[in-house]
Image (cartoon, rainbow, N blue to C red; front, top):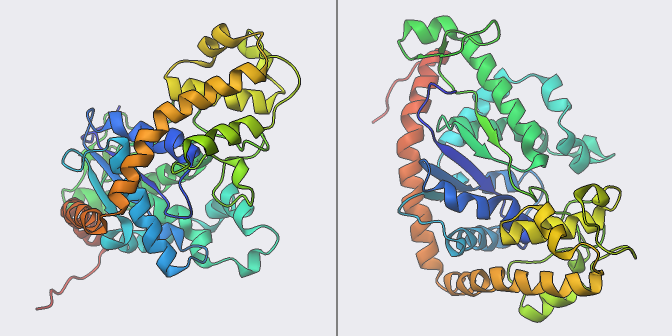
Length: 360
């Protein structure tokens, strides 16, 4: 239950080629939400530079993600589409949240540990503070719902912690300025008035985390050195078929029940991909293909993937060929996003006690 008007926020990083995991885990889920509640979809280019990016490639990839949003069916007249760096409120709120979040909270983030590896001393401060910027992305719009994959759930929990700490730390000030929203469910951890919502994660679907085609225990990734590990959204029909044909499996036939997928990560991944692409459950897939060999299932999966992805890939190519159109969509979206975020940041600064002497 939320005291705030419903609003969705989510984003995709513009790093490398978009793949099936980006589509099924994020972009495809954005499309129906735009008809359910006000939706803001961001290309999070500021997150991308937490590790080194070639500037020209970052520009290209930002346009590619935007093209994928549009090609997948996100309507820029219904939803707001923009790139993060065009709206300064993200960076401003992130600094305030850096001062609200605790070092211990950030130190526990598993993604930092994974990305920094053993060479943590050489990791950027931005990589460490990334979750505070993610919280700012969401709360700059007082977003109430965020569709996320399992790997981002921990970061969203941190967003909730930051919102709760801000609400608690500044409770008296929020009341003094009359900026609070009554909390329908106050508790010892949550005050009776809120400035920021405690955002709800939206984790749903049969394949919220798509795994590598070469190793079912690892997430499908743009950074994997093997292109055979992923289905890129721009792959042609023959390439998709070849990659699924070469996908790692085991010698056993597909089971008839979901329990039979346990300890079979590659089989579970392929069944999950089929379920997500077709909009059914894994159980439904196994009802149809249980007992059959992968030599039968893989071609069916390839055909389904081509059917779903080919129109998107074709439209993406058309859009990428017209960068001026993409840039216009991003500019319009940034202006609309800023119109929401600017007054919220103005109030945050008042709550924090910042003295505002307008220039000009």
